Structures are given as C-alpha cells and as structure tokens.
Length: 393
Image (cartoon, rainbow, N blue to C red; front, side, top):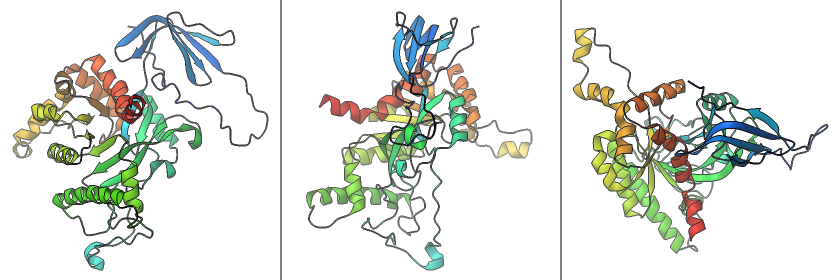
C-alpha cells in the first residue's frame, strides 16, 4: 500500500505568509521567489474530488496551480511524489491555541461578601461574564510546541478564542506555521463565541444555568436597546456585542440538553448558532435534525471500564456502558442523518489519540469522504459563512 503524503495548507492557499514587509531586515535578504512543483501525485482538491497524476505548484508559500496539466515554472524545484497522495490540511474550528487560560485573581464570592456589580475599570457592561469586547488576536502568542503537535495530526490552521465567560468575544483564524505572530494571523475576527458558563468572573450572578440563560437573553435585549438609543450612554460591551453579530456565532453547549436550550435562544433572537456538543448527539438525532443547526463534534470516547471486580462492575451504569459502546458511532450517525458537523480535538486528554479515535469512527461507519469533509470543507464553510453572505448580498 502506498504511503499517504500529507501536505498542509492546500485548502487554505494563503495560510503561509511571506516575509514581513513592515519590519526592518538585519543583514542580507534573499528576495528570490521560492517555487516548488510536486509532480505525479494523487491530489484531493476537495473532500470529494481527486485529480490523479497531477502537479501542485507552490509559489512563495501559496498555491499557484494544481491539476493534471498544471504548468511548471522554469525556476521551480521539482519533487516527484511517485503516486503518493496530497490531502487538504485539517482546520480546528474550536480551540484556545496561543491563548493563556483565564484566571481570576480575586477572592470574590462568600469570602469577601456578595459582589453583584463588575469592578472592571472602564465603560464596560455591568457583568464580567459578558465580555464580547475580548479579542483573541490582541492577546495571542504563538505556541510552537502545540502547533507542531497539531500539524503532526494533519491540522494546518485553527480558530482560536478565549475559553472564558458567557459572551467570550471574538476568535481569530491563525495558521499553525512557525512564522512570527504577525505573519500567521490570517483573520483577526473570524467568529464570536458564547457559552452558559460564567467562567472566571468573580461576581455572584449568575450562579445557575437558569441565571446564565437569563443573563444572555438580557444582554441581547440590552444590545438591541443600545443600538436604538445611541445617545443615551456609551457601553463598550454592548457596542462590541452589536458589532460582532454578523460573524459566525459559535456556542459551546457542553451537553445535549444545552444544545436545545441554546437553539431556543437563537430562535428568539434570530441567530444561527454553530453549536459545539459533547459527543452524545446520536441520542437525539431526530430532534437535532429538526433544528437545522450545524455542530462541532468532539471524538473523545470513554475508556473501557474495568469490571474485573464485581463491586466496581456494579457501580457502572447501563447508560455509561451504552455510551462507551455507541460513542464511536456518533459521527457516522450524524452523517447518515445529513446533519452538518465539523470535528474537533477539544476535550481530548491526549491529542495524540485523535487519529486513533478518528479511525475508530471510520470503522464504525463514517466514510472517508465524510471524515475529510468534517475536517476541511465544513469548518472552512462555517468559519467563512459571513464572507459568503457579504459577497452574495
């Protein structure tokens, strides 16, 4: 069997940037074009289209030509692949790559007495769990180690955001290359992120799921009032919430029931959420299909339970055993129901298990085409949905 040859970045041709034009150059700089031609390859130009005996031309880090009759520039370095395969790179649509985990340095809560109003300095909103002004690209720092680990799994880019709060602000599209921070940020505001978790906020409210739902709904209503009454006050948070409403809206539901709760909010405020689930979507396939939502699905399967001891075996519930058995079937069930979904590495304790878990999903019925679609075409489509909308209007 021929070894698969994976070349990152075909899908997103502009992912590898050229040298920084606005930075000074210390020493001699080689300005010659860097051109490579990969010949005699089987190239997947999309998840469902393959060109055999084709050539891929890369010029200064960008795809210049691809096809069976692609012209090879005279100055190209030619690499004969002898029938190996070139696939699109994967896109991780839900991550916190390059961003430090949020921490609260306040005692808050019962130790200091109740805290109901935000003590964040500035013209922000009253609740720190609503932070749509957060912009991931402003606090991003490249993480070469993590980028290398993701590249080894086949990923070439990621949508990274601050995983903290109910309204989490904007995430950026970033290449997993080794260039400088200035070169690998591809899109500063690629999507807006939300959840039902208040995160690191030290305020007492919300303290329950019901409170989180009420706060998010109130924030949308406040943002609508703010847009209709621009002369009443200036509020950075509400201004930001209104400014990001046309971006793809990604909601971290966390569990099956929260998917439907988030969808009800979306219907109320005429929003189309892209919802990240928890891998148990197979349990409510018909209900999910009726919502017409798009999903981000982890492939984090439970480990086999140790039932050698009768006492331990007795403590394992039937529902836990059934999920252990059926979790690898989840992507195939979604694909069979024609529910749009992208796959993510999120929630994996060890990201190296991604390939093994993906292979298990394929073994349990997910086609190779649907797997490639969920890792390339769908995350690109969902992330660039607003771009397509603006082009067609």
